[in-house]
Length: 241
Ligand SMILES: Nc1ncnc2c1ncn2[C@@H]1O[C@H](COP(=O)(O)OP(=O)(O)OP(=O)(O)O)[C@@H](O)[C@H]1O
Image (cartoon, rainbow, N blue to C red):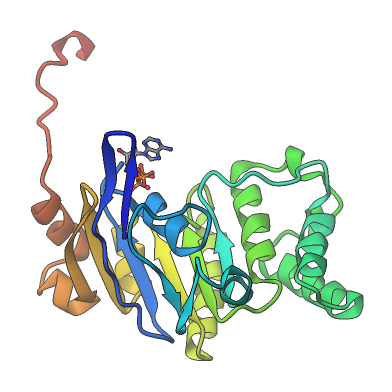
């Protein structure tokens, strides 16, 4: 895929093959093109060039069919935040055409699994950043999609909730689901994902199994070596007390 905004090339020909049933990490420095790539892959942003297939269905040629298979947690998600958490996830389920009884059952399960049961009746506008992330994740999962695309799902999420989410995703992948997840937390990607792509400047620097990409090093060390850009902090002498 290619995405050009004016004269800015945000994605410069990224092609990824995500095996079904895998947990695929997308890592890269700020501005690398991760969100742009995931937005194009999920039908939120039209590619300048290229196409996306979800289990053989073209996202842009047959959006309804493709989107039925997708659960998406977008970056900087905007929610109907005057609804309570419970109402919001219920709404997501009903939008997906699910019957009310199944929706009610799954909403209760999700709220409890994500440790939001006590806040089910609170308006989402009054949620913390981490709670908002978790309720958006619940809304992405309610229809049990076969592919989950999660843009920075662990941002602002506390360690216990992050461990719970990791467990939920591991079980989901074990049952045949596919997860594509972007994150800046290398340790988490290394532990959670079986595949990873490192992108920078709109290009793929490396892609494959996590073991192939990290090549005997930690993913974090490999990432820093590949991407470069470490600075020494020189030039900030005015900051030294
Ligand atoms: N709507 C837009 N108009 C112009 N430029 C954009 C737009 N959206 C993204 N960009 C540019 O495209 C590049 C890639 O942005 P993107 O949000 O995909 O990066 P990212 O890898 O998700 O970064 P981060 O890790 O900081 O979230 C950046 O240089 C950004 O400024």
